[in-house]
Length: 355
Ligand code: SF4
Image (tube, rainbow, N blue to C red):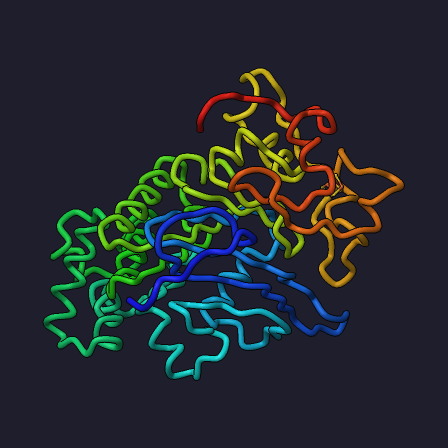
């Protein structure tokens, strides 16, 4: 579909056709307390075939980014930037054209699949609805395709399950069914916002595997949004870490885990149970909490919590720009190279192995 675009160095590494290109996005909400700058100067590309993960604590701007791409935040004020989809700026699309993109070319899997389904209609009917709306399928065609998609996401006996209601599905099955609904029209991009947070660990892994299998089956891309770096380790191609609405780090998954250049990413890694140190080593949470986006700290927004901050110095006065710090690796830290070498942050470990 459409022309491929070339990527710019600022948007990070990645190969293949660029499906989505977010460029210099600045957006926020007006509140009684002032403007909440939810997303500040965000740039990245998503390529066909990849799993692009966006990681950060609550309030980092990751979900706002996803909802802005989907055009689902009518109160959001975009003050700069573009969201190019196959070369067209989604921010300029009339509502009718945006509706044709949403659910058809770009689809979303939300965190809580129970609220995504209407309890009074069968699962099969609701999945088929997307095909009826966007492609004018007959009821019979829509049902057959819905059964086909339910089978694709690993629902056993899909022809029987299609006639069941949401409350008759387990949490894991509902999330699979939501994935089936999202792929009804073979979208080019599947945005999954915390798709497994409400599930237990075993089912989490199964659902994530299904999402990746779907991506390969329909030759699409996945934008996976999560607060948990552990979730992205095994299945991402590239990872973007966000903090206070800005990009902290963007790199291939192995580089991000093993050649970390940003203290915030190091903090997220140090709080993971299975990826850092031995089993006996205590987990180290990041001190403090994310800042208010109304009253953002001066300089680097992470400086009040950063163990590597220069105080007094550049960290509290100068906003670090996202820059190339190594091949195919971007970070927004004044001292990224020193952080990566271990000179500035004792948590930096040259793990010397692949994820
Ligand atoms: Fe920490 Fe300073 Fe780097 Fe910000 S710029 S992450 S405060 S060392």
